[in-house]
Image (cartoon, rainbow, N blue to C red):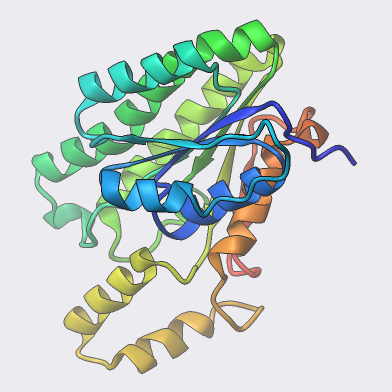
Length: 262
C-alpha cells in the first residue's frame, strides 16, 4: 500500500493543537512537507521544529493568521502556495459554542458560517491551482459525527457542520476529474480542548460533575473510551495518501462505533 507522501506539500489548519497537530505529525512522518496554520506565531514556530523529518529534502513551515480574516487568510496561503504548491489541505477549525438551536441569534450562525464554510472555501480556492497542476489533490475536512446524527445542545454546530459536509460532497463531484479527492473525517469524542469545552458546558447546564458527564458520554461508545488525536490523524493521513486515490466524497466516522446510522 502506497502511503508515501515524499515531495507532497500539506497545509494543516488548526495545526497548533489537538487533531490538527496530530495530523501534521502523521503527514510529516509519511514524508510530506508540512505547513502549519493557526493564530499564534510563537506556538507554531516551536511546533515546526518538533515535526518529524524523514529525509534530507523535507522542510516544514507555518502561517500565522486568524481564519476569521478571510482576506489575510487568502493572501498568506496564496503566497505560500505560489512558492511551494500545496497538494494536501486539511481543513480543521474548532467548533462553535454549545447551546440550543432555537436560542441562538443570527450572529452566532453567521459567525460559524464565516469561520467554517467560508474559510474552507477561501483555502480551497487558494490551493486549487497547485493541485490541478500536479493532477493530485487531497482535501480533507475535519467535521463532526453530527453530520450523520445531530448532537444535543450543539445547535449552531450541527447546522454549520451539515452545510460543510454538503459543500464537500459537491466539491468531490466537481474536482474528481482533476485527480483531486474531497473527503470528511468525523471525529467522535476525542481527547482535545474541544472535548473539555463540551464537558464543561454540560457540567454548567446539568449541575453534574465532569466525571458523571464523561461516564454518560462513554456509555454511548462501544469502544468504551475516548479517542486519542493520533487515531483521528491516522484516518486523515490515509485519505491524504496515494493509496486513497479512489476514495472520494465520503464521510469517515472515527468514533469507536458511537454513530448508530450507516
